[in-house]
Length: 307
Ligand SMILES: *Cc1c(COP(=O)(O)O)cnc(C)c1O
Image (cartoon, rainbow, N blue to C red; front, side, top):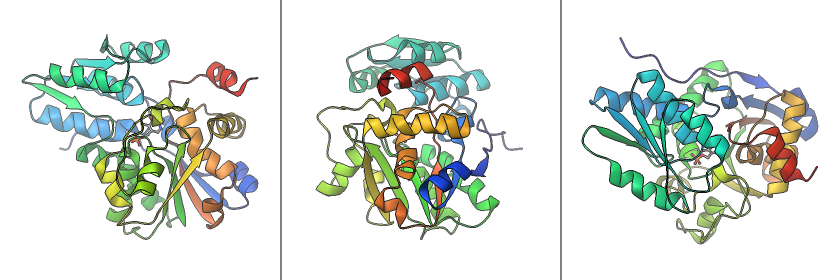
């Protein structure tokens, strides 16, 4: 018998508020409702289960965000110890959420690069390293959200999602292609200052940003996965960049409209619809991946919006 998934099937609902606001038919894939708070558990869960199948006795992660929280959650569910190496910039809240899943937290380095280097150096026999966005198994796991959407009914005219390192993008594209939805365009949204995908599209290769200058820390990959860039020549992908301010405003509107708190990383995708950007106006029925994120609280959102 196959092992049960660590993710749950999430609601796929029509948003009256966003439909009225944008003048189109807007659907939401509610990944914010996954037990560890984001879509990440889909790919991380599959990766961790496969690793256990191959005899892994410890999981190692280098993410001070939702990926680290998802690996810690997977470890607790599978009774496997987890070590998460996080950079010094990681918030107390994120560290608390990781420790709450019984994982060990090691703080190291000024940025993710240094934390990741230490995490990789710690990987010994029996350890499985779980990358936050650049792994084929991760993408295959993320693709399950599109399977659920396809089972629910007809294809939307476009799918809106956020891009950090591009794991979500690669997963959704894999899901579109394996469900016969390969002609559905994707609107890939980032915040200004974390726009490594938009810059890669412009430069025609995956450039590395010198630094991240956005509050949307979950979009803070300085360079997208090569595979995310490769998709740009095989699928219709529109790159959109919104401001931090627009992303935070979208989070606040989303609390009023749907009573769910998400990070600005997710607010970016929502902002493209709330702001009715040109790329969205081209389509009648839009599906938004509400990717979630638990490292920002209402207090953080208030602080960022200056209220
Ligand atoms: C990880 C994450 C993203 C970005 O996903 P990538 O796979 O890195 O592109 C966006 N939003 C949230 C809430 C995340 O946790």
